[in-house]
Amino acid sequence: MGIPVVATDLAEIRRFNHEHGELIHVAPSADAFAGAVRAAIPHASPSVVDRRIEVARSNSWERRLDAMTDLINQAIAAKSASTTGWEQRLEGIYRLTRRRALQFIVPLAALFMLTFYTPLPWWLAAPLRISEPPQAADAIVVFAGGVGESGRAGGGLQERVGRAIDLYRDGFAPAIVFSSGYVFTLREAEVMKAIAVDQGVPAEAIVLEERAANTYENVTNTSRILEQRSWRRILLVSSPYHMRRATMTWHKVAPSVVVVPSPPNQSQFYFHGRGASLEQLRGLLQEYVAIVAYKLRGWA
Image (cartoon, rainbow, N blue to C red):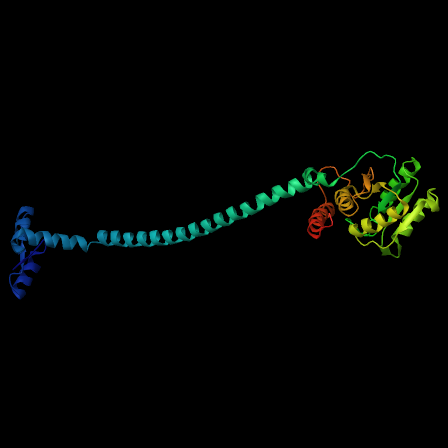
């Protein structure tokens, strides 16, 4: 079968055909050329033609570029999905952690604000404080604190002694009983007596109880002194927030003694504006715990 070509050198074409057979046909016009091409291509069924066309299209550079583009887009999408999943997991963990932290921090912060910046601790402590107007009595009884609620030796000692001296000077009682078995360099009861004497209280008007190690022993030991002297009414001086436990113990151990709570008018340890300090909270909590312990022991 000949090969249709367009050529201008007829001599060369005749030479080529002479050597190889009539492989090259010369078309005098475009229509003749198209007819020669159709004649050169074998006839095929439409399905075969369609298949050949499809094969040609599938192998075209356009199709190949489209396939490569699809592969690149799939790879990018897969990587993006993987990254998004990791970020979502991390974000989920962060949100869960933050939510749990807030569930813990918010109540803690609220408790901190209520404790240290509001009068709430003092409202809760108010039942511990008992005070009555002073009245004529047989004696003024002062319970020293040892280290007491402040945790320091001598804390509140001068306040209590000062209150007892004022009551004595005002003529509410002719005698003062200092009760303390605590020793810190010097015996606390003797220190209290020395302060009172230095402030003008006659030494003979002062009685010392020097064996008590706690409130229960303060009451039991002092009640014996009162019984020996037939004293039935006392003005009790102690820390403002110790008065509840002290009077409860008196009513339990020596119910025949009339106790008039007379704490100091001003207490440096329990001075407060709004909230309480850690030291004050410890002292208040200590009193509530001690009341429960005294109840369980039958001391109050």
